[in-house]
Image (cartoon, rainbow, N blue to C red; front, side, top):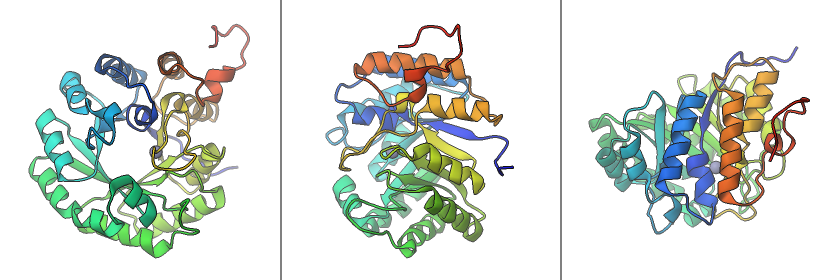
Length: 306
Ligand code: ZN
């Protein structure tokens, strides 16, 4: 018997990771529709947007407005930030949860944030203090802990140094993001096992891109290692604009289908995520990277596929 968790928590990151990679920006109205549908579908955690420079990521420039229009929500609505300015915007629009990000790859961090990982982390203490004073919860993510297109191998000490920095400023919820889609299952299993043993106090999230078709395999390996929190994206959208050949996240429809079929509960309604995925595909106007949206469930009598 495979050793798998009985329930999994998913965070829908399509509104952030997905839409930041689309040429055509979605209107605030469409984002609001999607966010509400996601809550109705059963998501308890949603990444609503980011507070990056609107010049760098124009697609998400209206994240503040989206928070204002969402108002109170039963779901945790988190936003990605890079610096103190992000915390200030979160406070101003009523966002209650922010996520810091740094890359374990020096070259990636320079491309993404124009800072070395060390320079990024130096600003984190001030972010954490400002967030804490405002009652905003804080989490952290580490991009490219497995591999990067620039460095052959990311030294484990570099990942550990970032985790230690997060812990030193009171961040105990940490995401490992395979932004470049270069991780393989054996490596994921080993990293997840090691990190959980070394840091039992940390709540771990995994964030896999399906760039080389290994996203779901990596998720399975992480589940076998005992990880129960994963990011997914509607219609499999996503990708970092600064990573060569970047492709989307593991698709929400595919992951919910997989977990449903394996009897692992998510609290998320499969039909509802299919409806959302179809709408997203229509709005982006190009084929997307979701097996279930393409193939359907294969059951006779299923409603029309797109
Ligand atoms: Zn991503």
